[in-house]
Image 1 (cartoon, rainbow, N blue to C red):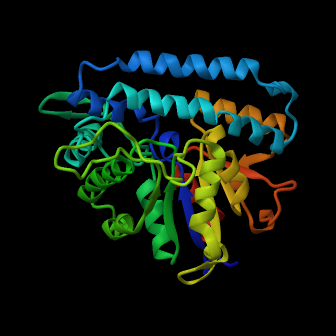
Image 2 (image 1 turned 60 degrees about the horizontal axis):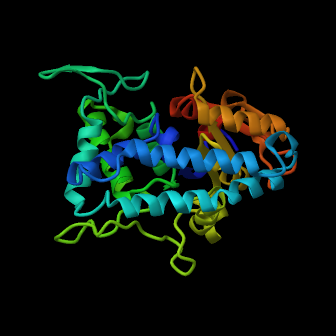
Length: 339
């Protein structure tokens, strides 16, 4: 594949810690607490989740150090389903989402992005009328340019996440795109068109479009099973739906499937696609450390994206290499997008 003929890419991205620099659940929860300030505190809900998670990890066999195959690790990740279900039901019982409307989510996303200034190195503070503002949600450097490159190459872009609100994710990107456009970046002139086509598969607060707002529950993506997108296996199942028969055929011919993620919940998707790219910050964050330890324990090679080459492609997970990048600019500068 020559540089003059770059690949058509089906790009699938995780949200928390990948497209966004950090986890955004507490930011989304704050939208609910603005409507329902007297319900169970977020600190209590978070502590209950961590207690359940820690107890499960302590009791699970085989222990982490004894899991030596991808299959064993994926079985452990799937065993967390009960912990995740309990967390969702705990939030629903608390009533955080009661009365929350789509307009609340949009305002929350706009406020979370407020103060964002686009620059090549990523997010930084902006000195405005109200002083220095650090955005609650900061999108990773190069996100818009990479999406635009994929779209212009005839490819597709999607987001697969265990997050709690599809609308929040979309509105964060839309509001952040406004900053990019204001900066006049030529590489993202078609960003509005790109964002209008992005497929986002995640959970959602129910009732956002109702006049009285939400009734307090969250959607169940897998309706027949009564399950949401909660685990690594759920994300892989959604990814397979998105790839479907198009896993090798894009809008302009043969397609390369690429998944970008940062944590253990992304392991299935990273191994499933033609190319799996792991996001790693410097210094490396806790969720990224967990995935790094898993890859080292399972002898999964993770090489810098700068070393990517055609000879690295494989249709089999046996001996498959993953790649790591600090941001989307590094992916853009690699041979992955240039052919």
